[in-house]
Image (cartoon, rainbow, N blue to C red; front, side):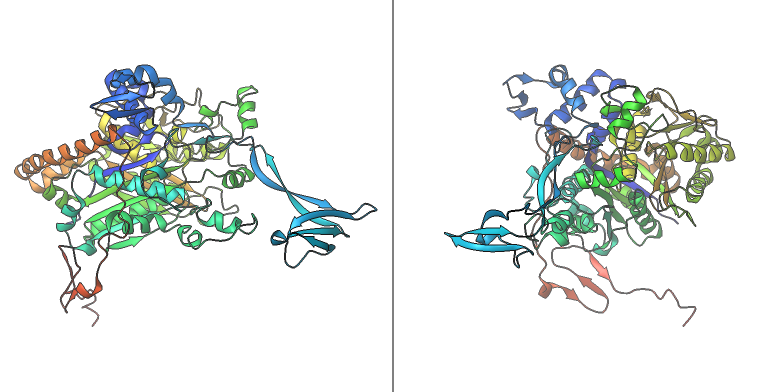
Length: 630
C-alpha cells in the first residue's frame, strides 16, 4: 500500500504577504473576492506593513484612530496594494547604486603630493609611492609614477522592478537575527509560519513518530549573497574590510535546511538541500514525496528561501539579457516611464523576467498519520517528475525534458482519477518566466501535451505575473497559489497582460487574463518549472476534496467521520494562530541553544536508540533488504 503525502500546513512570506491561511493567494485575486474577505486580506497586510497595531481589542493607526477591518480597507487600501507584489525597487536607491571606478593618476611634470594616516597606508607601498615625512601620524607621500586608484561613484540600474516583501516589513525585527543573511531570516519566519499553521504542537507530532522518520528538505539556488553571507565575504577585502567568521558558513545554499533543523524543529531525522536552479523546490518536494510514499518517513518539511534582490545579482541576470529592463518596458508600451507594476508579462509581449524574494514552506504527512492526529489536509502531492534536457548548445536554452515531466504528470493523474477528471477538472501553473523564449517554448509544450491527452481549453495561469521570479522557491509560490485555488475555486488571471503574444501556441489552452471561476473544476493542479541548465520538473497536486474521497475509500466512512471530528480541534487551534498573526507581528519559532542534547543521556543498545527529551526511539532492528543475495 503506497502512502499518500498530504499537505497539513503551509506558510511563508513573499511579495503578496503571509502565505498561511491563503492570505497571500487572496492578494492576487483581491478584486474578485467579497468585500469582507478583501478587508481581512488588507488587514493582514496592514499589520505586516506596520500601518496598524492591535491595542486593547482593536486596530489603531499612527494617527490614533480606532479601525475595524472595513476601516483599514477604506483608509489604507491603495497604500497596501501599492506596497505589495511587483513594484519599483525599495531596498536601495536603484538610481544611485554605489560602486568603484578605476582611476589612473600620476605626475604631469611635477610630482604629485598627498597625505594619509600612516595606519591606512598599504603595505607594501605601491610602485612610485615615496613617503617624504611623517608628522603626528600623518604620512606625506610623493607620487613619482602613474598609479591606479579606485574612486567611489554611483550608477543607475537598468532594471528597477522587483517582487519584494510588503513595504515596511522586516523579518530581521521579528527575532534575534544578528548576522543572519536575509534569506535565512526569511527561512526562520517562513518555516515558523508553516509549522504553526498546522494547529498541532510540534511535540505532539514528534510523539507520534520515531525521530528518524522526520525529514527536512530545503535550499536556496543562489546561496546567501548579501553582506552577512558569501557576498560580504567576497567583497570584504575589496571594500577595505575583513572577512568575518560567520560569512562563509552562513552563505552556504544548504543553510535553509540547517536553520530549520537547528533553530525551528530540533530535527534529528533526515535532511537535505537539493539545488536545481528555478526548479529547486520541486526537486526537494520530490524527495519528501518519495520518502512518504515508501514509508521511510512519515513527516516532511519542505521549502526554499531566496533573497536575490542585490545590485550585483540584478546586474548579473541583466548581463544575460534575462531581465525586463526599464528601457525595454518603455519600448513595449511606447512610453518614457516604465510600468514597473506590469513588468512581468507571461505569454504576452514581454522582454524578460522580474527577480523576487520569497520563503515558502510546507508540512507533509502520510495519510494514516494525518487521520490519526486529525490534521487538516489542504491538498495531496501524488507525484513529482524531474527530467534533464540532454545535449544542449546553450546551457540556458530549453530542451525536451519538460515534455517528459509534464506528460508523465498528466499520465499519472489520468491513471489515478481518469481521463474525464484530467480534461475537465485540472489547471496549469505555468513557469511563465515572462521571457520571449519561454512564452513560445512553454506554450508549445502545454499545447502538444493537451492535444495528446484530449484536453481542450486547458486553464493556464502564471503567478510570476504578480510575484516575480523568486528562483529556488518559484514553484513553492505556485503551490501556495494552488492551495488557494483549491480553497476558493478561483484561478488568478494574468492581469499584467492585455493581449496574448502572436507567437505563442494557445490552440488547446485557455490562458486566463482575468480571474476565472473554476467552481467544481479545481481538483487537479499541475506545477510546471523550467530551470537554467535543463532542470525541468512538474508536480501533480490534488485538492482536499479529492483527498477525502481517497481517504473514504481506503479507510471507510466511519473512520473518515472520526477523523473529521478530531480535525475540528486542530482547525480551531490553527485559526487561533491565524488570529494572533492578524493582531500583531509574526512571532517565529527561534530556539537558539535550547534543549541541547546531552550525549551522556543517549540510551543505546543493539535494538534501539533513545535521545533525551524525545519520546520516540530509533529502531535498530533493520531488515535485510538483500536476503536473496546472501
